[in-house]
Image 1 (cartoon, rainbow, N blue to C red):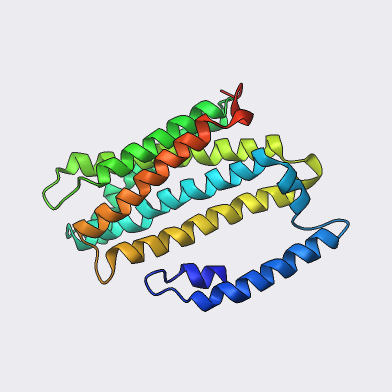
Image 2 (image 1 turned 90 degrees about the vertical axis):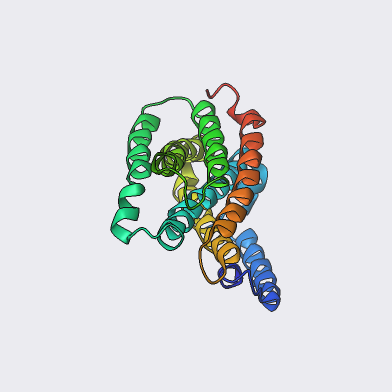
Length: 234
């Protein structure tokens, strides 16, 4: 029900929130009564560090998927690039994500890579706000790279945080919830893109999407630097 609601924020079906609330209440009641719940809600309620990790992961991938889906759509429709040329323009993002995921997996710290990733997400969103039909090619490549580095660092760092904060006996379901947070971020990103672009991708829609992403990037920076659980995990 939540997914169907998020899929069309331009024409929200508010009535879907009622069955969503009912089903969520039923799920919560069922899980709280089970001796070995699939989703340990008591653990989440008492483990604020893990819950913040899920929130940070979901919002981060909301921004990343806005670029993967929304920026590429703008490159094709507003700039007139073919799908092949658009793929080449996004290559720096993919390469940066690959390299930084390898570096992140070898980095013992968590807070430092996450803070850097959040700053770059915000910077990347700021760059998108100033793109137009005559923006030089180098700037277009830079915009993609600004989101590729965080993609590599965020995935490995938040995974390390989940393994650190989740109880050993619940690590499987904890990892599944991390993936769920990522998917919710992706779905919300597609809704934001549809809301910003409407019938076609243009500069105005890109700038609107980038403005929302910049605000969320600042929120991520605050969530990361003020997270007491990450102190000492640099």
